[in-house]
Image: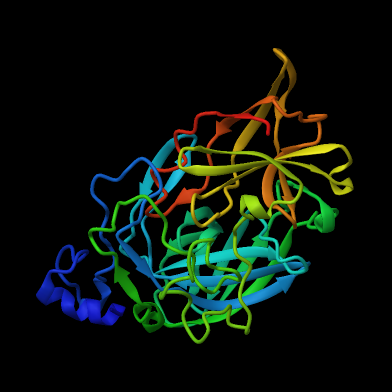
Length: 380
């Protein structure tokens, strides 16, 4: 069902979200998607949410080696994270869309976690100027976004300021992205484009069950590891980025595709973990310990964590130290260290989770990745 059909049906069917009286601007301003169905008795983990929606693309640009995509959908509730506390952000009365940015390295297709600030300028002023939230959404994966209100249709320019990544860059990324970058993306905003995005509710018997909705099919390899991308991907044509090609997916490789030696896998707080030992000069020589957390089915990367590692060998502590956020084109974003020296079969390896992912969450993730006990492995 499309948005306008939902809106027209709302008066007769009692569609959710029609709070209060209709104002002089007309029925359509009281959007039926302002309060989409929420799962009752949500589990403490990743679950299938109550609805899904289409996404549109405003434009893609390149600057200083970055590829930046600006996309949109209708406004969303979401939860911000501070430590292990959540704060639910409701859709405001003036919110007219949810604007999103994604960032990747043009040469390697590696998705780059960083900070993104956006200023939006139109003929009648600046409807938005602020830091975009780093976010996790089941269909969009890891991205940056926020709800905002635009009063009038017309031409707008989004100025996106990208900070250097707070991670060690290795391999083909070494020495790059050391300075801030700024890029402008001009687009035409029409409220009808948002209203016409497709919106679907999930069958009640499926809502709340463990699992994830598939990534949108505008991503390269956008099956998330468990499907074809579904029926509700990006708006228009082949669901690409608006310039004829798909965007890199914000995912990490499955365990069976990891280079080097996988020494174990684990699970904590609904997140899956792959732990590997790599020996390659791009890490500086010796053994590089890789700890790669991801969502359980889509394999969406989980940045903004703080991790540590401890190795016990023959009853003695052989290593103890923090893991560094690291970005590598072969294994994607992960946490690692080259200080571990070696890993032997039989070593007892503990991955400590000092801080859970400090990324805002959309429905289906807000109760997951919160209580994350340490992972204990015996090196294989």
